[in-house]
Length: 166
Image (cartoon, rainbow, N blue to C red; front, side, top):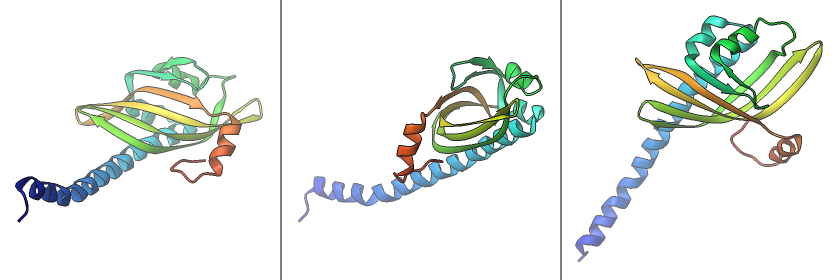
């Protein structure tokens, strides 16, 4: 005869795998949803698409660049049309993880970007954290933080298989 406590453990153990599978499926769908937003963001930067960028970024958006420069959504949009500013040639942003807490989503991932200024191209790879807030059913990015990885770290990551761009 199985003790009641042991029976309860068996039942709980049988329920854990489906619950974990459901959580993984839910996170996969969240990653896919935010990957779509990140892809739109990337395309907007390359195409200098002010309208799309303003639909993704909240009016109170704050960006902390990989060099530590802080800018608002309006400053980011204005920079797309200024002379003497590096132009985004290509950018790939890959969402690795999404955590949702009520109406806030914390999105972590990797990026690879090339910019051009005065005919000189510059490549950068790194990691990002984007914080989104859902308002009226729409996710808007309120905070962005990028950290560029040194070349030695990028070369080290290439030898390891992980979920990233590198």
